[in-house]
Length: 170
Image: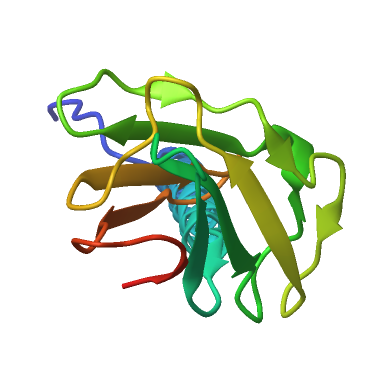
C-alpha cells in the first residue's frame, strides 16, 4: 500500500484561520484608509466654507470727499460687513490695496478703524485717505482691494464722473 499524505482537518483549520486573519487585517486597513479619507475631505470642506464665508462685503454706497484745491479724491467713506454665518474679522489684519489709472498698486496705511473685531451681521464705517500721488481726479478710475486675513478679497473699481466734486461715487 502506498503511503499518501493527506490534508488533515487540523491543517485545513490552520489555513482557514490564516485566511480569516489576513482578510480581517486587510479590511481593517481598508476601513482605516476610508475613515482617513473621509476626515480629510471633511476638513477640506470646512476650510472651504470658512474661506467662503469670511469675506468682507460692501454694505451700501461709497462716498468721497474731493480736495478743495482740485488735486483729486481726498478720502473715501464706506461701510463693510461680514455676511451672516461668516467668521469674525479682526480689522487690524485687513489689508487695503489702492491704485489709480497708470499707477502701481500701493498698500494704504491711513485707514480707520484699525483695531476692531467685526462680527457677522455687524457693519463698520471705513475711512480711507488717498495717498499723495494716487488721488484720482474727475474722470479717472481707481481700484480698491479689501483683503481680510482669511477669506476672499473684495475688489471695488470705480470711475469718478466728469465734474465730480464729492459725494456718492457711482
